Image (cartoon, rainbow, N blue to C red; front, side, top):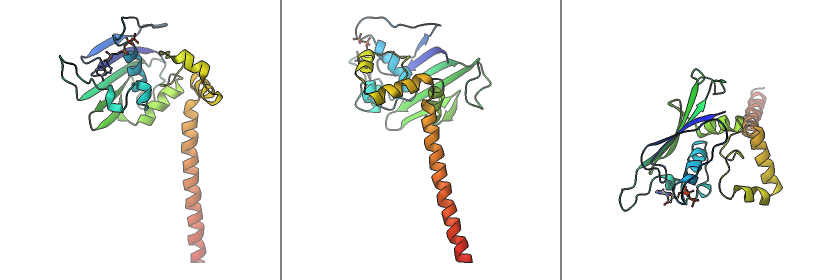
Length: 202
Ligand code: ATP
């Protein structure tokens, strides 16, 4: 799945609406210290469903919202949109008509965050599955942030396995297996209840 564009508004240091085109091939971000390079990578990971504030270098999820400076007041929301190439029609059913798929995540102070795909409200889980299946999830080895190489070397075997599963595009299978197991347990409970009722009627 190819990324085409990143649009940010109120995300960390990107207080004004900012748009970046992502060209084919390897993308590197260069600039002076503190200019927001890591914030860009974090914006991509956040939009793909990152749920750990710590891994976004914050204490809480609302820390991704522009906190204000001496010159500018804080913002009430942050919004990031990632535009993906959908010419191969890899988007979920119902969102597959267009050549592009826009995934948006928005957070408002005191109101939590919400996701949209091509303007339609979706669950965090839908976004997570989309990227997990495409092997480009929020923890994908394709996104190399600072300290990541060291983290891979120091990772425990279970953590390395998770990275390999993410790279292989099978991370979404775990979510689906958990869902299937839950449904199976609920069905077994229903069957047991039905047995009880039938015995009472006999
Ligand atoms: P380096 O090269 O030193 O790693 P960098 O280019 O990766 O730097 P970032 O770490 O992405 O820079 O950005 C850091 C800047 O973002 C800091 O100036 C910090 O004050 C600012 N920043 C982070 N979170 C917020 C926020 N919520 N509101 C406003 N500014 C923020």
